[in-house]
Image (cartoon, rainbow, N blue to C red; front, side):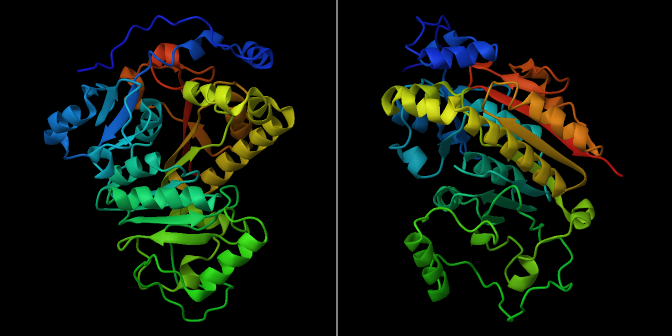
Length: 396
């Protein structure tokens, strides 16, 4: 059997374009980490309860599943092993998720009964892990601005039988304002009450929904919904919505409501330049380095990203209840998208306080330049790059 444990000696520097090398130098990043793709394992998460089937899964994948000692239910496999065609994957026993991303979720310390918000939910692996941690109590709300990507999240939740307490909204994460169902319902909404009640979810769309989708395609935007009105594309049987009036559930919340009726835990895994993901950067060899210039190096896009990251963090914190926890993460290794965003946010929010991540004592990561923040990187962690910061909301 193949083994995920490899030599960590990097090969020669990959053929990166000069502009990207300048970008790395400006951010104090070592370009040699992009030569480590063949030495970093691929990570999978095993659905809890499937441990007795590990020998069968190993036999099918033709490799050992090496347990990740610091991260429950995570296993390392050789990077070249593909899982999408395996029965174990198709039957919902395993799914791929980087260990660093798993650590960011573990940092939230999700407890039974929590109401959890994933503000940038696609492509769905983190959402599945959150649902697994919640179990049979609490609720999970996933939000993403891209409808086709959120539809993939829905497929994953259903595939792994994890959608029972979940609801998914196509919406702009910087302005989403719908609170969990534990909020006080029945107050005046300001919306027209046509008596519409949530029945059990079905994949069949109403005539009205089909017409709305048709208009969106005609307008040339089949994937993005109007940011002015969140669109609910899935809710589980025990998500708390069945039997409630739609106008009550979908009403925007006032800022003060979240202090007592907001989410217990919020994950903001923000859009970024993805420069910490070796496999992502490698794809530009095939996509063309001009695409990298546009997606990673373009100054205007980077400035827009920094504003977006701060707005996502700000809105996620607004939806957090007093005493709750929020984790902000990106797969960028730049200071601008991580520590600088955290610093700007803290300067504007006196009720926000960075928390020590207690479970991180044995994690293979290093401290960020701000105390209590963490950084994963290929050389230190044998994972993709990831920045993690955890906040709590103080009583004001």
